Length: 606
Ligand code: SAT
Ligand code: MN
Image (cartoon, rainbow, N blue to C red; front, side, top):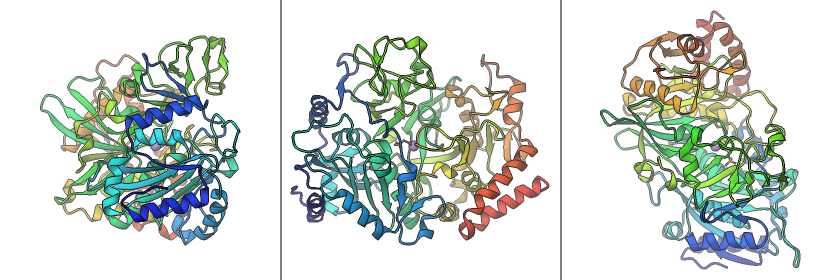
């Protein structure tokens, strides 16, 4: 058992060890030596491969079970006392009933395995916006990943020992290891036996049966979004699925911080680490996935990145699309479900060079003839294959990224993948209009979750899979946060962007580094500069306001007109979809949003 200075923590671990019956219990110290020891143990047991030390020092390669490659939304539950409090967009089960089921699953589930106890901090240690947690797990892969993704071990334990405050996070891969048997390459439970469970009223997380990403690294989606969104509602702050970046106008050294919410696998990591293609601008990264925001004593909304690493989608990350992400995973990185090259390095589709003959694909098969392989039907790297890399290794990391006070937020962006209807950028008239924009975010489905139907789905605030309570009440919370601003002029300006609009099947905007052209416009708009045109949905840039000088991909005045167009017929069809979406929330839909929709309808003559 463990013997920390905190009796509550000791008793909690003992209670779970009695239920799960591990062979031993290990309190993680978070040291580099511990990381290397645990990862080398995985290698020795056939669960991982060590990558070529010369090419990728201290880095490891894992292949998951084919049933365990992404989040599982139909196995994710919000267990509030009342079903209504989980709302229409979450799976709900009664907490008592769920605990009953899960205790029977957890009973003896760690037999033959080690129970690791991981104290961790989400956010800079001791920071005003930060929170503490403890995860118990029987997966060394999870320990290694938590070491990269959070501040974990001794440093967090010392704070927990002082305060006794921590969010309890319980995880097991759900596969006891009988004596004498060799472990599976990736132990986990069958798909229908996976449970990703949040108890929002108790601020507690129980997951079972999956070892992958957001299902198992409980500091991330389960805590920093689902539980934290509930805590934020109770305490008046915001826990959001947003990247945070710093934009600097190099001539004057003026800076602005921007937060942006896009659904999973829509390019948050790329935007967060963007290298501008226009002179005079610099982008630095604070975070690529999650933003916690609170007002400071002067009424300025400030944001922290609660994470310490990037859990990024590997495919299509290249020198060209995201050099900073590639450089971030140069060492001390865990790769999952990418290809493994004969010289002990990693490969994925879109890495920027051909797949070496003899590469092992994510399913463990040798790729004998890379050229004949169908990269969509049978990719070498799974479409949701990931790297977990320390944020401090990012060449573009902002020196302020560990500021415990957070960074001041000037603008908030919403967006998704929309092939039609939605212009490259439009601007909200005020905070509540921005909340309306967030509430109607929609996106084409990506590979970040298993079992979703293809097509556009509504993903309000990019929080659909991550909101820990009734989404209608969450909309209301956003309205309340705006209303609580001491000084409304300090509220971030809100914009909606869409890098993915198409014309005849071809993207109308180059994206990636060229998104700096849109960021430059946003920067100026935050200072009240730049010319806009009013449309039914908000302000769009006047012709010529977005700098397209030097673009060689065919972008011109004409294509800009198309990418910025607001077509009333498209929006009439969109309104019908929004009506359908809003109808789900019943009396939980804030009247302010209903009024916005009515005013849009009026403008469209509906
Ligand atoms: O939830 S994960 O951490 O697996 C990745 C994502 O969906 O953004
Ligand atoms: Mn995400």
